[in-house]
Length: 346
Ligand code: ADP
Ligand code: MG
Image (tube, rainbow, N blue to C red; front, side, top):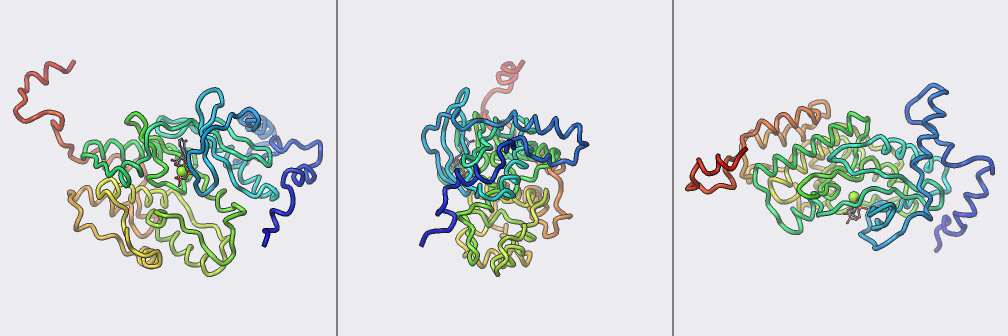
C-alpha cells in the first residue's frame, strides 16, 4: 500500500498552498516575543541564513540518521549537509524547522559545531554545518575500544560541559546529547545535532501510530522523566511532547561520563523493556565494577539524580570535574630526571 503522503508531489503542492507574494523564508516568526520593530529586523536576519539548495554541491553520503541522510558537500569549502526528512506539506512543521534554525544562527562556541545556514524552501530542507574531521566519541569508545586516561577523560568531559553550558545559556536544550553527537577533532570536542530532536519526531516516514521507533543506543541517555513519558507514548499518544529540559541534558551527560569511564553503555545487553522499567523506577546502572574513585562516581550519581531539580547545572559539573585529582607525570617515566623536564618548560 502507498502512504497517502507519497501520492502527491510535495513540490507542486507547497507551491500551490503558498500565495505568490509570500516568501516562505521571510514569513518566520521569531522565537522570542520581540517588539514589532525588531521583529522585522530578525526576520531579515533569518533570511540571511537561507542557502539556496542549488548552491550546494552534494558529495558522498556520510551516513543516515534519524532525520535523514547526511552528505559531505561543498559550500564555500567543506561542509556537512543534513537533509531533513520532514513533512513539508505541513505548515506547522515547517515553522518548527525555521524556529530551530533561528536559534542555531546564534551559536558560536569553540566546542559547538559551526552552523553555516539552512535550506529553508520546500521541498529541500537541509542544515549546513562545518564538516567535522576526526571520529565521534562513539567510534572511539565503542568501535575502536579506545580508553582515555583520567587526564584526557577530564579534558574531554570539561570541554563537553563548557559547550553544553554555553548552549543552555543561549536557551538551547540539546535533547540528543550522546557520544555519537560528539566529535573529537584535532583533540578537541565538537558538539553536534543540538535541538534537532523535536523536528525529527515529526518525520513523516517514522510517524506510525502504534509503534515507537527506538534507535540503537539511545535509551540509556534518557532521564527518568522522559522514560515515563515514553511509556505513556507507547500506549498510544505518540504526539505528546517529551519533557526535555536542561536537566535531561545533564542526565545524558552522566551517561557520557559513564561511557568514558567504563568503555560501554550503561544497561548494555539489557532488553529495552527492562531499561525503560528500571530507569523509570529510579534504578541505576550499578557502579561497583567500575574502577574509579568515589569523587568520580559521585559525579555520575549527581547527573543521574532521579529528580531533575537535584541534577546540577553544567557550570557546577565543570567545576567538580576540574577539582578531581589528575595523574601527574603521565608522559614521564619515574626515572626521568626532574631537572630535564623542568628545563623543557618555558
Ligand atoms: P547519528 O548522530 O545518530 O549517528 P546523524 O544523522 O547525526 O545520526 O549522522 C549520520 C552520520 O553522519 C554519522 O556517521 C555522523 O557521524 C555523520 N555526521 C553528522 N554530522 C556530521 C558533521 N557535522 N560532520 C561530519 N560528519 C557528520
Ligand atoms: Mg548526529
